[in-house]
Structure formats: structure tokens, C-alpha cells
Length: 171
Image (cartoon, rainbow, N blue to C red; front, side, top):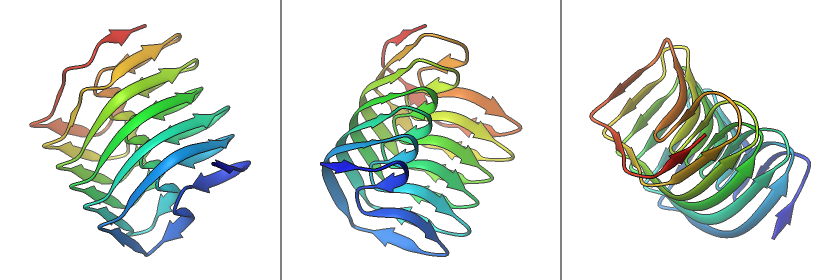
């Protein structure tokens, strides 16, 4: 078990101009903001590829994800999460928030619960020209507020292509 306050990940708390490849994690993570199954906060041309998490993530704040809580100006390729996630705002099975980032050939399965806004099976919030392509979610999504989606809770100035969701959505 890993317990922290902000920017908490099972492998790395925060990474910038870095990469994670062929990695796996399991267990339980607890924190407040920027909590991720592999990385809490991923930024600036970082890459997560061919990696997975089998994890329970609990955050009492924002940016909670099965692989990373916040993905900024970075990419996730061919990665997955098998999760149980609890959070408030911007909660996703793979990524809590994706900003100016790319997610390709990736997936999530499990349960995603959010008590605030922007809750999605794969991504809670996708903004600022983010791209989601050839990705999927079979996560069950439970949201109690606004912007709740099987794949993405909120997509603003971003795109989704060749992707799908098969999980139940409750809002």
C-alpha cells in the first residue's frame, strides 16, 4: 500500500521528459490530488508504453487515474489498467485529465466512481487538442454529478476516434 498527499504514483510520483516501458504495478494507493496507478503526474514529452496497472486508487480530490492522474503534453501507448478507482473530480479508468496529450491503443476495465464532475471509463477530462485513438473501456462508471461518460467524461477541443465503451454508466 502507498499513502501520500499529492502527486502519488505506485512507480513514480511525477515525471517530465521521461519514459516508462514494459512496466506493471499492483496494490492500493491513497492520496488527495494527482494520484495514478503508475504515475501521479506525467508531463512534458513523457511516454508511458506497453505498461499496465492492476490497482485500487483512492483520491479525495482531483486528477485520479488508473495509469496517471494528470497527463500533460505527453503520450500513453499500448497500455492498460484493471482498476477500482474512487475520486471526486476528473476521475478516469486510465487517466484523470489529459491535456494536449495522446492516448493510443490503450484500455481500462474495472470500476470508476466519482462524486464530482468529469468522470469517465477511460479518461475523466480530455482537453486542449488531446487525442484518444483506438482505445476502449469496459469499466463500469458511477458518477453523482455532471459530465459522466463510459469512455470520456468531458472532451473539450479534443478528438476521439476508433474507440468504444462497453461498460455500464450510472449518473
